[in-house]
Length: 141
Image (cartoon, rainbow, N blue to C red; front, side):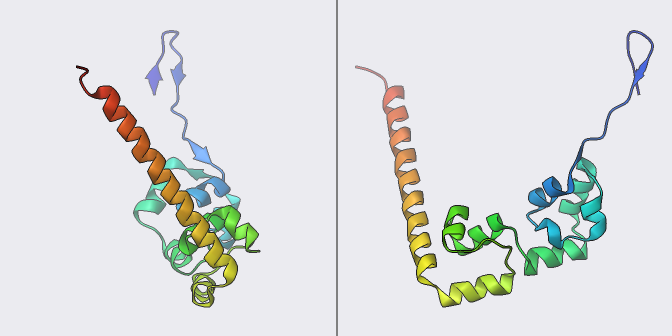
């Protein structure tokens, strides 16, 4: 407790978050987490503890899924929009993601190509920006 000027004490409040926010930060699908996780609030300290020493349910979820769309997209090498265009709107298990990779449907090939182009363009723009910055920093003669 900290004494304030008027003699009252102020308490340091514990920062908490909704289970959905904590699940997002942990990279897991909320609906697949244990009921007690879904129904409570998660403090910053609890989140840090879950990240530092994940319990078995968290390890299992991260390994096997079902995974939230951002994780599915990353594992497939596509954007979240690309997942939607490919008709994937639900959480997928690791097994299903691996099966999709093996099947390599046309939509997945297209979305991976699109993603590769996006990354290439981002790298080109970054290099151009760095080159411009280097020219501006170069001594003038």
